[in-house]
Image 1: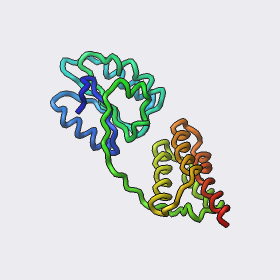
Image 2: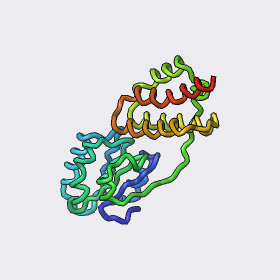
Image 3: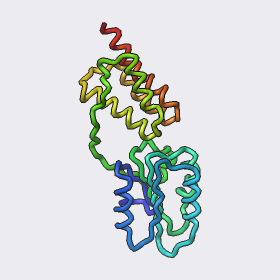
Image 4: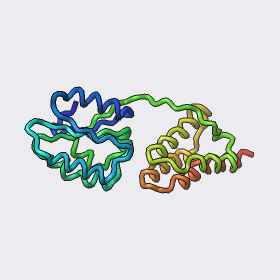
Length: 207
């Protein structure tokens, strides 16, 4: 799968399924899987400890998660650059932007393209009022990082494909900025308000 003998990065929506397929494809060589929802510094320490257990044959460590924290990635940098003898790493996540450039530079990256299907939201951006806006924000204020990014992408899909809105530059910039802010761990309630206020203002100007 990867040209680099140290392993690689796989970008796919199907983390659990692809991890198992990789494990089966590598048999009878040993694999150790670290599949998490959010990959944190304590998970990175587990991986490092496992990597330093000596092996006669190649052992592949499969790290799969919807998000990898920055401290966890920084902790892995040295071992990804200089892995112990007979150790390979495969990192799996749904988005390339999940990984720091320093991590991506150490491993070959493979991206699987798959069309994502979004369901229509009950929210209508073309007819948004303040009470609807704040009710929606309240309902979704406690999402995890990968869920928050998914909702922003779903809102964009809603606007373009379900409501067929001609988005302004401010509205498009709001979606892009929102994704960046979520990655920086900005409070999601504030991010959602910022994105949706662009549509509220548009409705008001149209009255």
